Length: 499
Image 1 (cartoon, rainbow, N blue to C red):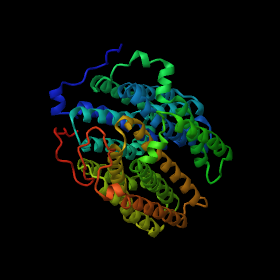
Image 2: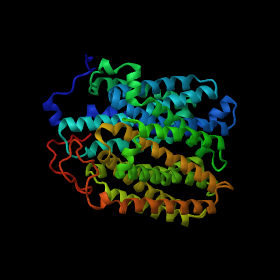
Image 3: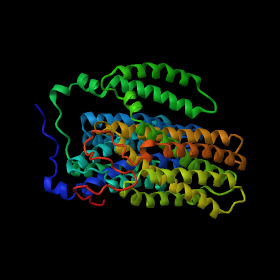
Image 4: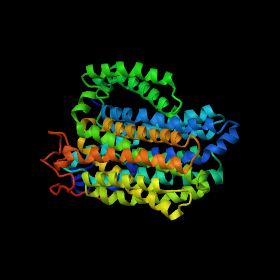
């Protein structure tokens, strides 16, 4: 016996005419933006938090690392739950957690309460992107689309990049005008609006079969031991990386001791949480993860590393340094939508690798006497890198991931991105260990040149991309033959409504 879905699907004629109407896409864009904006908005509140709570500035770093850690673990977990329990249910549950985190953080009286709030926000916001990908994939198949809905994927990309870019300025305004608590409290009105939109406009999930809805059955379907093993091992790995260049050997030991049995368990599991065999067989998906991690390593090294250098080595104020990097986010947002609408993969990925190399060489040529215009030009190059890699890899993910695993795959896509981001912080700490000097900046540029070369090789030597074939697994729903990766499919039976 099945329960009744929360909402019925849209009538067939409406779905065929406007499969991605604004009412469907708007809650997805808002939900997908919650994670990046919360990742960056806290930056301007760390100093006043330390002063108000009478703690050291260094101890407030836990408010940044806790969200990254929670998100790295929760993204694929939310994706798996969305596949099993329903994307709408998990999407709404995630928004409620963010609301709770905003309340706890806004009322927090000590660093421990603020850390709990950031973990709640990290877990809650992690539902946005993977659930959105599940809902988009489901809607595309219901509408009979045999090509990725590029405009919608571009909107998701813009929601992430634009909010990450405006996070620090918005945070600065909020903290300056109303105090640091508003870095948390801002989540309350935003989540209330998002919750109302999602509950009203997102289509209901299929009813849960009571025969498969008990705790033990659900735990088996989502592979709870695999999730727990992944969570512990990933947490230990992230802690180890974030402590470098002063390694935390206990964290590394925990990682090894939990990762090995987790891998063994997953290899024996019929339907594992982390499908190692499936990933090994799906080279296109594995390369997409690696490209995303390496490219975001470069982008975030510029965002954080160049900011440190501009302030300490170039003598610019925090406000000026932030303003000089704003065009980078603007270029990313402006380029994402037109690139995504054409469903291009190989072209944007090559452009991403080439611009990353050019920008990295540009970093090696900067000095403390370089004019501000030159710094902006270098950041603009990385803005192109950010847009091209997000659009190209996101479309490659949509094509390469098995339809029934799009939620977990999307979560892992974000997890690999977080690993790149965390590694960028580690590299920045290493090259600037003696101060944010020109020499340290040039060393950073050299490291990024190596990463850019790796991304270029992962792209130009990819046989799937070279042959012009879509990376969609054979036999997947919506596959109608070989779809070129740099030419939009033209035999789509319905038109996408621009959102």
